Length: 374
Ligand code: F6P
Image (cartoon, rainbow, N blue to C red; front, side, top):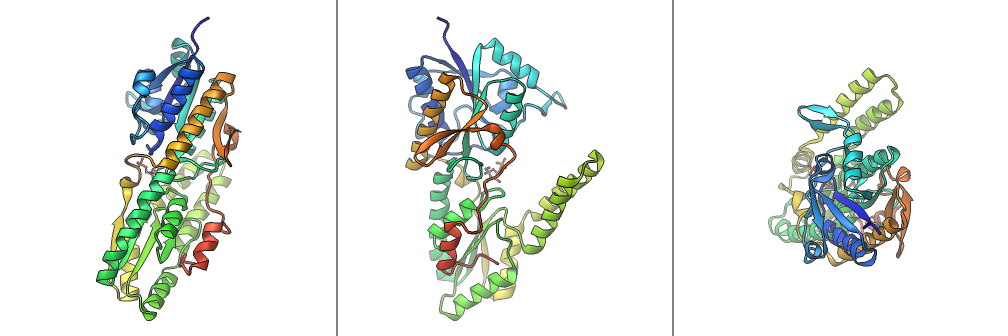
């Protein structure tokens, strides 16, 4: 009987737990089901360019604890790839490459963007399944994404460390946390690290309310404050401008009008850059306390995965091998409760898991007198 073959790639931003997932999938696919596993380098770009690496028991050994991805990654999209200076749809080329390798299917480790790309490939007739990766925890249809637990530990430790220096200098320290358009990482690390103010995209903030909370702390004898701000958090005014533009884009049908609104949104995003620095300056003016900024940035994405992420990655990766062996595609392998579920890609792509305003973490933040900026 011919050996069954499957491909695997990692796409989008890297995150801790990718290698643990590759290992879990590879070990089960090869060891339990007798598959050959072909790794593609650098996400969908390496797939379109047919750059492969054979994954076997030897290459899968020793990668459980390693950060990043042994396959490399990129944010390239199969349907719109820059090739020889022009944007091309590489879907047909990808089909041909998968066929040439005799692949039954393709396993894609990635976040929301990867789910969209995978859905397009699935609709074009390719057997695809995805696994939810991102430090942002914003993938719809799954209780958890691998990478988040590790980033949460890193951001929490950073906020812990900022306390002693903020306290010593009687300063406000504004710590910017990643998370794209979701506040999970900032809220989680802010709560776990005991931040005094937590600002997330789901709750637009008023600078005056934040300054009032900081001044109230001073009045009660705490001359310093830690502000955990999600990179996507916006003031009430900025959020209004952004939401209006997005709503117009959702309604617009004419391609020229859509392009104009897209440019407007890109400009709003550009203006948002440096927001954390501006916020710190505003708080210094309003509170009279010296203010400083710490942008946590890519340290949150690097390094060895936590125990929780290794477990999640191994659970989902091995379950993905079960689905591949059964021939179940067009799905994301999701964590649901203690188990694993096959969620249709159509229910994942284009959706984002943001924090409901009545989420227990938000309730807990309010109960601990944390200012959420509203
Ligand atoms: O999705 C993970 C993430 O780190 C986000 O938190 C952040 O907004 C984004 O990726 C940064 O992307 P890049 O590394 O491509 O600039």
